[in-house]
Structures are given as structure tokens and as C-alpha cells.
Image 1 (cartoon, each protein chain N blue to C red):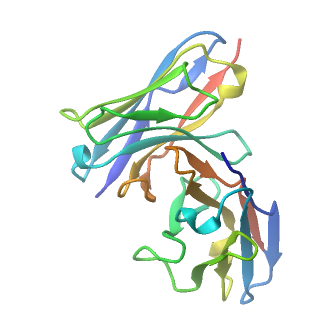
Image 2 (cartoon, each protein chain N blue to C red):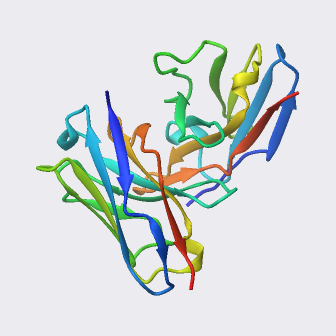
Length: 111
Length: 119
């Protein structure tokens, strides 16, 4: 099994851009799709990005996802940061052996 | 609307058992693989187990293998997690979640059920 490593926290001012990384410890990041989940305090997770870079309907285009093979990582970028974006964000993928892997989560603080 | 509602959480002593239930509505339950995911207070998400659409195939995390069993009743639109030999480290909020495809993204998630393992 591999691990997905995320920064513990990031913070930025409203209107700015934040990028959260999700680094895969072994195997190629593009072996399996990466998803990103948002979890606001006291709520259940919801999907903001699936299949590396796809947005479910209803998710603003301020949210975008990408893959970087050179760093073996996925990234979630939130542009035009808003106070409502303050939440925990977790990446998720599969290990190809019928197991699901989550990153440790990143707390986004809007200053 | 598409909805998942968990029940069955509570306080249980170490070594004892508890069964969580997840009631599904608003979609064709038998067409979706289903997962259980847990979250330790203040910590990240941890995948627990998955069951195939028909219930014939189940896979679980190494941390719960041999102790937890995932099952489903498609006639009742119900998902279950039987948790045996509980340990303090199993204390968490347990979410059920629909797999939108085949090893795809999770949507929706239930509201979660808190299981506290304590003497």
C-alpha cells in the first residue's frame, strides 16, 4: 500500500489562491484517479474534485484539480478564496488492490 | 433526494460488539457499491470497507480485517457494519458512502454515527 501525504494546514486571505498538495509515496500518481473532499466543521465530506480534475455539478469553477507526474502528486487549487471555503480538504485514491487510501487532510483557514 | 442515514452508534465496552446500519433512499441502491469510512475525532478520514453491488465481494482495511464485516440487504436498501472485538482505537465517527461507479468517487456520505469504545 502507498500513502498520500498532505500539508497539515494552509492559510490565505480572501480573494487569494491556495494550492494543496497530495503526494503519493510509491507507485505513480496517475495509476489511479484522485478525488478531493471538502469537510466543513460539523458536516460530512462532499466531493469538490473527482477523477483528478472533474468538478461535480454545483461546485464552483474556483476549484480545480491537477496531477504532476514529476513530483508524483495531485493538487487542489482554490482561487478567489472565500470565507465559506474554510474547511478540511482530503485527497483520496485507490491502490489497485481493492483498497481505498485517504490523505491525512489539510485545514484551510481564510484569514 | 439521494440520502444515506446511519444508525446504531453509541458507547460500547472494549471487546464487545456493535452493528451500524445505513438506510439508503433516493437512488437504486442495488446498483451501487457501498463503503464505510471512519474519522477519529480531530483526525483524518480512514477507509474501513467496501461491498459490491450484489454483496458477493467485500474488502476491508487491514486495521479491521477479521473483526469487522460489511454486508447489505438490497431488498431493504440497507447497508450494515458488524463490528466485533472492539478496541479503544476504533472510537470514531463512521460514515457510509455510495460509490458512484466502480472504485470511483463517493457521493453522498451519510451524516455519520459516533462509536465510542470505552469501559
